[in-house]
Image (cartoon, rainbow, N blue to C red):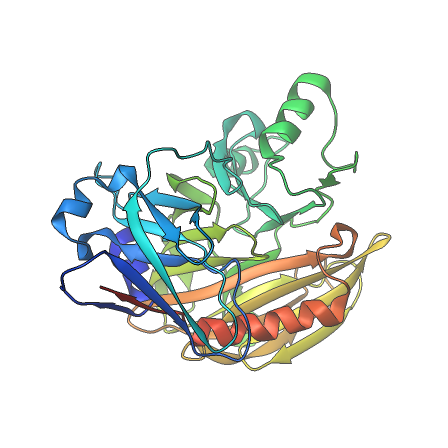
Length: 388
């Protein structure tokens, strides 16, 4: 298994560092013909000068062209007490470069943790996460134990659940508290959204599966342990461990590191996996057959969802992309469209998200499709970062 720090460095932004005199300057370059917003730049703190590392809690990222500081977040990836990354979200026009400075910033405002995740023992043992646009959850060992001990209320599933938000502020704690203390169900929309997406034993909105012979699918059970790495204004990161599970050719070892950034409809899932070189992520077809669209390295499934429309997406990098397939036997929780992956060096990176029409986050599905096409290009062409 890869360490948390090494997994993040594998997919990191191009970073060029030169040691010269003068102010610490970050030169960002966007090589694409599209503008870039809500895209997170990662700075490895140990690539900064030692005097800056020693005062990292007191620095900020300054935009001299606008005369203001950007929102930043420090992240301790391996939780050893030392910060490893400084992240921020610049705005870059198409085909442009822009300069920022890393300088001391003592008057930082209190940041809302828009990007938030936590273990929820009061609801059996969900793990739930959100940002200002979307929310998700998955299921832990206590829920599995209930089923295996013949008790009610549990679930055995490593599928991913969608919580449909139509507000930009955090709702996880609010919805759970209202359910526990006042009996207000988050399965009904009280003006902020709801959880009416069905997962069951399906893959839900992006769970993993390996296809064996005779259309037999192999999946993990519930996560066995979690590690919340960071919450903040720009990113939540956490890790989920799974018990070794049976694949078509032997045991599978799996660990996921999941991150969700501010302003994004898709989360990033970095998987460390042993025992197979092929795997797929599935979207449940739910109650009826919707519209499946595959384009380059991503897959969307648009369906009528009660009186609204829900469009789920799975995306990966071109190096991991291996096509897609549909399995639709007409059996509840077994009907899926799958995006297929190639595992490289026992690692996989893919992205999962959705657009709910009632959120009004996009002007329509054409705008959503354009967002996904642009995102696929941005993933393959990261912002170049030159620190001097």
